[in-house]
Picture 1 (cartoon, rainbow, N blue to C red):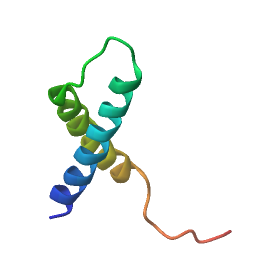
Picture 2 (picture 1 turned 45 degrees about the horizontal axis):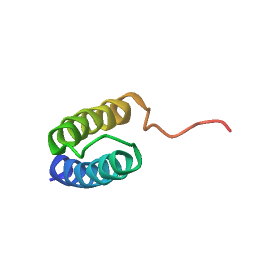
Picture 3 (picture 1 turned 90 degrees about the vertical axis):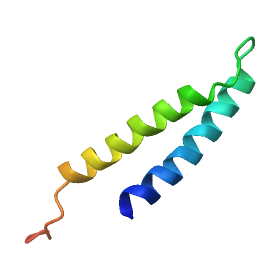
Length: 61
């Protein structure tokens, strides 16, 4: 479920970002496929970064 919800929210946010940027750029059109591809890439990036960042408590501050 964690993967599904992460992808769901990433998909929505990336699609909104793609729509806004394409609306502000003269001569470009909104492309759902490009937003979906970017959402998959960002979701993978989120899981890779969360796997790299250590989750252990710090012993000394």
